[in-house]
Image (cartoon, rainbow, N blue to C red; front, side):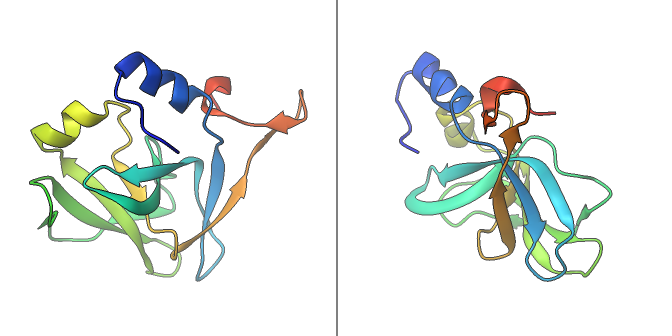
Length: 136
């Protein structure tokens, strides 16, 4: 997903972005119904999945916090509650640089090698679900 520089273009790009179900790669538990591919702004070649709403009965915060290597965001690891596998992180306190880059409120991030991603479909239209469909 290319990140446009203009905020309106960013919002349009996000609305057209495909939505994924994310499952723990270790135990197949569903972690999120609203994951989208997400570039890391500080490292453009890295691809992750992000969401604004993980399944709280499936993930929890791991004690302790960290700082990103390339910015001053404060992070906390998240783990699958069913098997304990660390599957990503929660941005507890975004830095100013990252807040300016994107304001989509996707503060929950999943590692692609820790989850299985499956595209969601809108059953009424038979098309892939996108963020535009507000897939709740």
